[in-house]
Length: 230
Image (cartoon, rainbow, N blue to C red):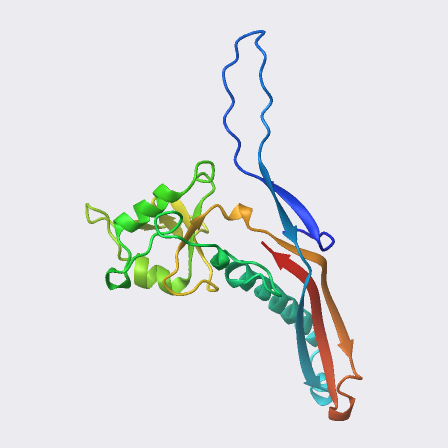
């Protein structure tokens, strides 16, 4: 995540090639590591809570702190959803907007809507060089337990290995599993998600207004953020 001004362009490099053994005194040609400029735009995220003046008067002293926490959580949940499902039009750009092509960067499973061991192996094979070390599986909780939990390999051993010792959910083929309920049922992503990012330009601004709902006796609490994700 970034906290930088909007309309910024961030260069992102692809994994570099390994170094080579050098013959003493020999000239080594310089290598230009290719980069792609990722531009973060500025889109507004807005959330408003309205409460009655009577309710505020009767509430505990920590009420406003609670409202602020809830508004902040709503904004961050909006960003989290956009990282997965954002269309890029008037909002952030998410993983789902990638051009997924069978056999190139995607594996489609159809048999009873349950993937097989071979499907997971095929997905691992599609992962490009340099991204493997930090790669993780991502899916929602329902997909894990209805589509993945019972999948076994050729020796009838489950491919999902739970991890009760650490804070992680578990592992599939040696790669950690991440649960995100913004992901649609049946969708399973594999990748190095360090290459996903969001920019929250000026943080989250919380404001209160007693004028906007003057005639109805309400008090408005508003969260406003300028953000983007790519």
